[in-house]
Each structure stands twice: as structure tokens, then as C-alpha cells.
Length: 116
Length: 116
DNA sequence: CTGCTAATTAACCGATGCATTAAATATGCG
DNA sequence: CGCATATTTAATGCATCGGTTAATTAGCAG
Image (tube, rainbow over all chains, first blue to last red):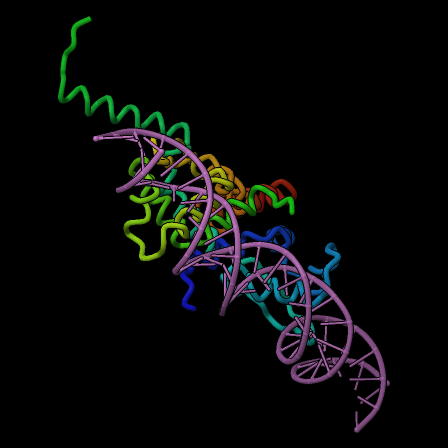
């Protein structure tokens, strides 16, 4: 029960079919049938992938007659990126340089003016 | 079978305990016992979380006597962020403005110089 | 109302995930 | 060697996941 938001987002993204669906939706809204077309899985399976994406906030859906259109909602990706940014200094080259620089300054303050 | 790298990374990140372990490791290497301490789950459970993180490339491990030390490896976070960057224009305000700007330029080229 | 199309829900199934406890393995030390 | 500590593996249980087919719901068109 009570799964936190970030877990919902990451586990929604953990499935390749769902990521493919998001990729398709980045080109525009689509109905369930349209989304299902490229995959050789059944319609109910796609329908449940969409529910997972919706629960994670990654898509929203609207009804137009008997068609349900899905739309990409990228806010959760912002949240996930924000979380990862907390680790940026461990992998981003420019951040690593900044880190080293700050460490050097720190060092120089404690042990200033080494000649040569 | 043959799970792709991104899926491994995202599903490793989908568990709150594992994210907490990464957070702890961002402050420095730690042994299994040290990592287990804040949680009220068994040692074997922690051990398996570490295996998941290792399989995703998010940590590396070394042995020192009977202690196994885990170290954060952030490269997979770079990969995940890179994937998300493909969607940046959908959520990053400055990217959205850029998008609008580019669209305007495109429009002006086709329909130039509307006076006043 | 009937029938058609779109989509979801129900019922089921096998695989995987995450936890447990108990047993096994690895390493250093007296 | 024999023991203590650190960690992993084995065996097990239960819940969730991702798929299926069959049945149901929703909306429009005649």
C-alpha cells in the first residue's frame, strides 16, 4: 500500500513497452488502439499499461465519443530528474570539476601560500 | 530474460529502500551492516537490494577482509537523465520558451513582416 | 432497440519481487 | 584447527506484474 510518488514514477518507467508508449505520445495524443498498433500484445495489456502511466501521472486521458485519448504529462519526469540532480556531482563532468575546484579552495584556505 | 539497461536502472530506483541506500552511499562507502542499520529489515534483504543495485551498475563492491564495502557508481544516473532529457521540452520552462520561440521564427519565415 | 466499434474489467496463470528464517561461506585470529 | 564476525545462499511464503481470453461497459449509428 501507500507507494510513494517517486517509486510509482520509476516503476512506471521500468517497463520498455511503457517507455515506448511515452515516446509515441511525445509526438501527439493517441487513442488506445493507435497506441497498441506497434506492439504485438493484446489491447487489454496496453490498457493496463496506460493505467499504470496514469497512476504515475505520466499521462492524462480524455474521452471523445467512444475514443479515449492519452496525452503525455511530463511533470513526473521533472520530479525524477530533480531527484537525480541530487547525484549530479557524481557523474556530471563539469560538476565534478566544480567539486574539485571547491575542494582546492577549501584546502588553500587552510594551508595558504605554498611557494613555487 | 535479457532486460535492457534502462529498465534495470529504473526498476532498481523504484524501491525506496534502495534509493535510501544510494543516499547513504553518496556520503561515502559503507559495509552491508552499516547500510542495514537504519532499516528494520533483515540483513539478507539488504544484501539482495545491494545485488539489485550492483546489477544495475549503481554500485560497485570491494572486499576487505570479511567486510564488503559498497561504493556509489553514478554512471547509470547519467544514462537515465539522458533518457529523460529527450522529454525536457515537455516540462522545463526554459525549454518550453525556446520551443515557442523556435516555432515563432519558423512561422515568421513562412509569413514574414506583418506590419504593426 | 440492435448492432458496431472502442475500451475496460474479470478471471486466470506463470514469473518475479521482496520479505523472512535457517544454513552455508568467507575471513581473521588465538 | 576452532571460533567469532560479516555476508551470502537456500528454502519458503505471499503480493504484485504482465500477459492471456472472455465478458462487460460506453457511445454512436441505423
